[in-house]
Image (tube, rainbow, N blue to C red; front, side, top):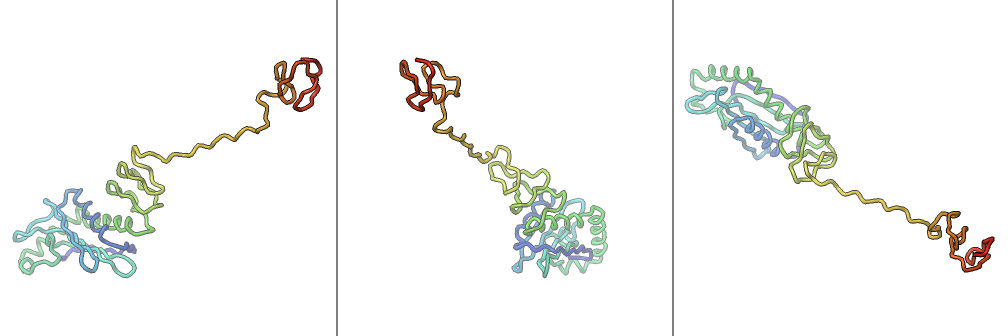
Length: 232
């Protein structure tokens, strides 16, 4: 990739690097970079980023920060170095130029001053974490709009699913998303033999014990046999 290179091994092994590569490309595009990327047959990713003011041109070709994301035993290897935009191999024409090492040194110095190489490694690490089951997003790194990590992950600060989409388990619902309806608990039924009026508060003509209606002149309740004590 050139004379300048940052290298980092991450003990993270997502099942597929395709979503990682696409997420890294979207992140740099959102920051105003010109981006090219491709995935090899072995599953590794090559991403090239260019932005005016930081990178210069050599014989009509743009210099860039080229990033390689490669699955290895036990994790993922990430390398970043100065090269030609969109090309994994620096053309012989460029490398034979006398001023190429000088230009590379200048571009590398600007990249290091802007900490672009470190930033690239942080972005790749965050994407690897999000797409590796069992790992949490990097602290303070915001997810892309509408992104939902694996179920059961605590949401990053400020996470909001896309409107109208059901949230993953344990995540806050999107604004306006209807919450599930809770079933109402029915009131327990009243005992079948409970009197409609409290005992002792029966009006005249009704048994004060069971509430049954009394006939004219009754001295005993025809329902429970309670003595009325006086004619009705």
